[in-house]
Length: 82
Image (cartoon, rainbow, N blue to C red; front, side):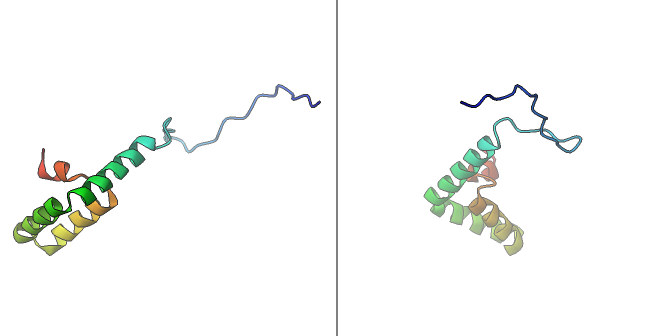
């Protein structure tokens, strides 16, 4: 039978000025997953919105928004200001 010593464990070193996220980024990952799923589910609405953006602001702006939506960085509701 092994006996373990009761040594103090050294704290994890981190760069000064950075904070450790206690949830491990789970909230952000969940939000991105939810945004991706909603984008896929509402693809017709997304396409209509992006066509309107392209008409008003140009192709580059529309493409940048498309990438953000596909990556889950933003939701359609957030873009439309709801």
